[in-house]
Length: 295
Length: 309
Image (cartoon, rainbow over all chains, first blue to last red):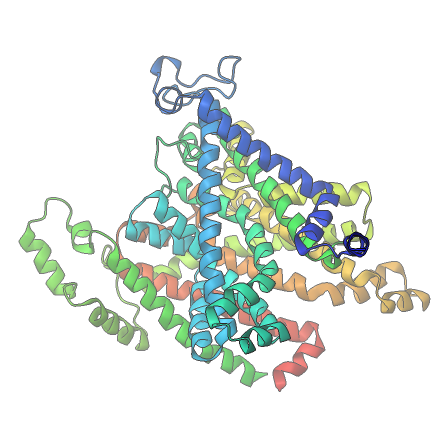
């Protein structure tokens, strides 16, 4: 008696949002390719950790081997201090990935909290937050980042703040718009009637149902964030040499483009492939949250 | 319409005040000050102190900010701590370079990407479409500074066709403009394609075709005009971004524009120069976005109706 209706029920059970998104995502070749690219880069970054010794292979200088073009011993050649560029490019993946994720996470957290407060409460809080967002949005984000880094000093955590701050206003706007569509729905009213306090309502009931656009926005932004990190490092305000960040490597390779142009090739290629992977994932996530948009 | 424009301009004032206050405060946190930068390491403590006194650098930050804003109200953006030259004049000297680069880059991108986007949309699902979209993805994923370096290696060092940097004539503009155009082209081609796909199957296109309108005219007059709003939005955003944010391209190609001026001034702790340039840049970008909104009205009569309300 009990088993029968249950099995019927599970057959007709609607898929949850995440299962539905994954089902859509899986169908897109580009999106899966992006996932493979990023997965491979993560694997390479982890493997590099065991294969190369940081002090010896990545930053250790070997002047006798300097400026060697690519060869079987040094796949990507060596740089001006005789360091193996392959080891440095592999090691560099960890910086771009970890700082990129950290920055997107920071901008999401800040943007979601601000956007939720603005969207849920409205009134003065909304005016203040949204006008601040306008102010931050009107300054070109790379210049904002440059100002912040030079004011508070060069460090990894400052770099995270510098690249995330440009994205916060955009995420705040998306989160606010999304929260506003949810806040007046009946289940929110029900939660309020049941005596839930504001924090519970915002975080459990409203945000959980308003998060999709934020997730889409955040995944679309990872690639831009990775480029911004490399760009700041390229103009000398991000991660400093000898740390093998890709942008930093390009900056030092720039002095050797005459005659040693192979040095510029690989770190740039690494940035491009990584960014492409995240772009594919971003497009895929956007399309799978809203299949109507997909053409 | 005029009331709408005036309203937008008035709304710009608090934003500019916010921007200037924010930049002023940040620059205040920056270690080292103008006295040390200008007088160098050999200056005695007394010389430093005299310099600070003369320029009021010892006053609290809000006093300095108030003084600065009072100057702006009278049209005086201050003088550089470092070069002693008028900020506005220095900016006006550099902005033509930035404008030249931004407009030529955007122009190149618009010319190519709108036609490419239309082709991709019309041949949706074919080899042409997918190769264009793959190219766009590559363009979108390329960091500008790397692309710039590759172009220098190819066209300046190997082929020796074009100069690698500087700004002394048309030849010097080509490489930076192309670099700037590539990323914009990628974005704009994608936007044009998806925007065209939205409208291409609409009933009014079919009606136009059924009435005997040629395919060319149906695409150009009926589809493109309706697909134009998102395209114009992206053009505006891209143009605005390159007015303020072409720092990277300007650095790679030693292009003497505003972006490099700002970066150099930040390095020298030249607060009036940084603040002034950022305020002017913000203003330029905001006015540009306003122009974009006005253009909407001419493209789409429905939007014009909203403005006049």
